[in-house]
Amino acid sequence: MAISLFNRRKTDNPEMTFVDHLEELRWHIMRSLIAVIVGAIVVFINIDWIFDQIIAGPLQKDFYTYKALCDLSTWLGVGDSLCLPPPSTEGGLQTTTFGSQFMTSITIAFVGGFIFAFPYIFWEFWRFVKPALSPKELKSTRGAIFFVSIFFFLGISFGYFLLAPFTFSFLANYTIGTSHILIARPTLADYMENLIDIMIGSALAFQLPVISYVLTRIGLITPSFLKTYRKYSYVAILVIAAIITPSPDWMSQMIVFLPLAFLYEFSVIISVRVFKRQQEKDKNW
Image 1 (cartoon, rainbow, N blue to C red):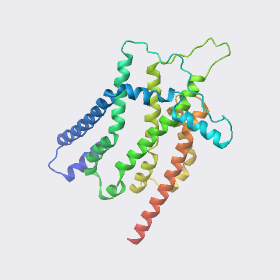
Image 2: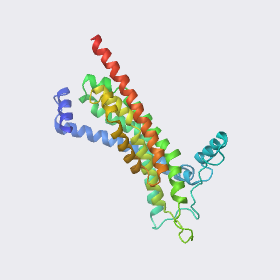
Image 3: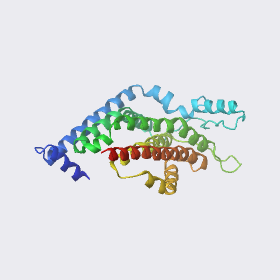
Image 4: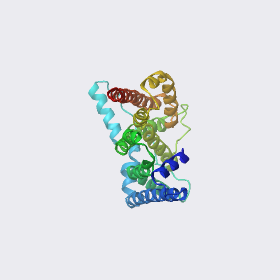
């Protein structure tokens, strides 16, 4: 694929050699890294506020999701059935090494920088790939930067506001036995690893409609293909849900599975509309 990409770019600009393409790719990567570093510096400067208000949010009793679910439960008249118990982290998160807090600050800074700079990073990637695309492929990917970025941030929001609270609430309050001899003392590194995995995993999973749109426009998939392999796709979605959710409980996995299943059905609808539109154009032509 990389060789094909370079060959097609070479056709567009015969004067560019393979080394020239690598040099161009290097500059795209360098500009993307600079954008991430700038975002990371901004995050690091405000690290105290970001950690207290954002990173530690799902661990707080007054976190928006916990209040919203309780309000919804009251509005539906089902008592406290939808209320989530906040994570029980008495004594706070612990660190086991001298440099743990500093390294966590660096991790937060660069992950935050990557999230903020994602639209620009994808734009740089698009600028590199664009000359190698055919006119048909260019039409198929119109608005790609906007929609990829929108679904990326929707996935981040879903992971942060919904999946993370359910996951940490279950894991922190889960106990074995009744003797209370086990005391959970979660570490800062463990919490950050789970939070990042949930958010980035959700962001990637939410790209399904965009992928469906592009592949249908290019002609690699059809609505009948998506419908035929729907049951296999649901099995794959269950596996993805199990990977994204660190907790083994079925409720957390269902919280991931249901939106992904909805996104799959939404992708089928998008594929149907795109396919019909292409057939009409072919008829008119």
